[in-house]
Image 1 (spheres, rainbow, N blue to C red):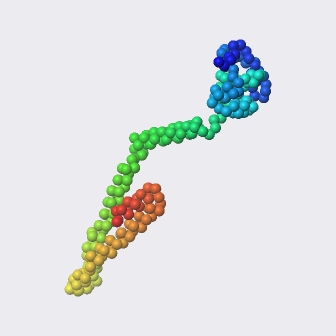
Image 2: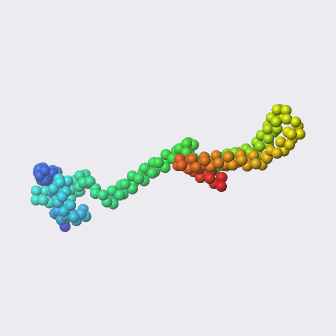
Image 3: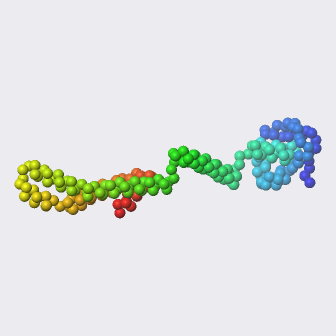
Length: 213
């Protein structure tokens, strides 16, 4: 059994070697440095270093009152990098992540934040409508362009038979092919520029590539 201190006062040696009188609780265990090291689960050299650095107190004969020393050790010792520090870091990361998740949830409920899957679907559908509208331009417009050309020919006084012959020679299919090629080229250029910008624009670029393939 470890010896205990039953007196009401004991002399404790603290940092700098100064001796002071301090009230002691009854039945506080007095330990040797070796016993206290075993009590804390550390090497004896760690206890000696704590004493030399003034982080824990001793009695005049060099013994240690465990309860007092435990409190001083916790108060004056910075935990080394180890499981404790890793646990604290992990807890900090967890709390930060939890706060961010809560913030995202609030933004989602208020409509400031939308699910990524919904945004991708909406962007894909919008891109497809833009592509379809652009690629339908040649089919819609080539006939009107040919009519404008025929009207211009008639207005300059060319005989009707020649107007008919010239109009017949207009190749609407070739015109559509040319216009469709130019529109596809523009869409591909836009797709490439989106991919170079990164992030959301890059996703848009991949969508355009998929739509144009």
